Length: 52
Image (cartoon, rainbow, N blue to C red; front, side, top):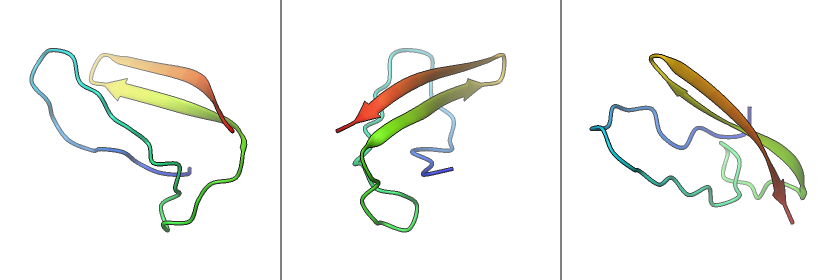
């Protein structure tokens, strides 16, 4: 687990979360492949992202 971008409730619609490339302690995460997970009450989606 690198970081949690948000842990809240949002109204229906489009939303954008931006990862600043830092881990939960505030240190810059190294380059590499990471997995991003979006979880809602009825769905969980995981995608690969590449940090350069």
